[in-house]
Length: 262
Ligand SMILES: C[S@@+](CC[C@H](N)C(=O)[O-])C[C@H]1O[C@@H](n2cnc3c(N)ncnc32)[C@H](O)[C@@H]1O
Image (cartoon, rainbow, N blue to C red; front, side):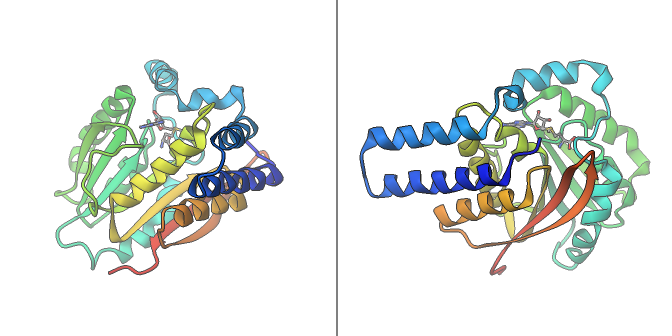
C-alpha cells in the first residue's frame, strides 16, 4: 500500500503535536480531536483487517496461503541479513537468539537454519496459532537439514505489543510486515505500531539489531521511528536499504541498533 509522503508527514507531526499537548496538560477535548483526526487520516478501512487476529486465523486456515512469504521471499531476506548474522558470531556465547515477530508462514526461519553454521535458537511468535503449527512442522521436517545440529526452534502464541520475554534476550528481532499490519488498525494503529517497536527493542540485547521489512515509504517509516524514539527517550540508529520493487511498490529493509551498544 502506498501512502503519500505528505500524509505520512502530517501524521507524524500531528502525533507529535498530540503528545506535546499531553505533556503540557492542555485541553483534553482538543487533544482527543487531534488524535482522532490522525487516525482517520492515516488508515483506510480496506486494509484495517490486517491488524485483526480473526483475519489472519481465517487466512491461515485456508491451505492456499500455506508457505507464503509476505512482501519479499525468504531467500532474499536471508541474503540481506546474512552479513549482520555473521558479524554477531563473536558476540554470542553459545548460539544466536533470533525472534521472528509475527512469523506467519514465512520461510525465513527455514532458510536461515539451513544456511547457518552457527547454532541458532529461532523463536517464532504470532497471535495466530495456525502460523505456529506451520512453523513447527516446517522446522521439525528440516531435522538433520539444519546446518548446525544444535540449532532449534520455539513456537509461541503471543501478541507482539506485549512480548512474553525478558529484556535483553535476542540478538536479532525480525519484523517482516508485522508493524505494517498492526499499523493498519482503524483507530489505534499508530499506538499499536509504537508498542510493537518498543517491545521489540526491549527484548533486544544491547548489541542486537531490530530488522524491519516494510512497503511503507522509507521517509515515512524513518519519521515514525524517530518520533517513537524521541517520545520514549530512546537512542537508536536507523539505516535502511532498498530490497525490491513490485509493480511500483518499493520494499525496504530497516536496521535499527542501539547508538551506544555496551
Ligand atoms: C503481514 S503478515 C507477515 C507474516 C510473515 N512475517 C511474513 O513475512 O510472511 C503479519 C503477521 O503478523 C501477525 N500479527 C499481526 N498482528 C499481530 C499481533 N498483534 N501479535 C502477534 N502477531 C501479529 C499476523 O498473524 C501475521 O502472521
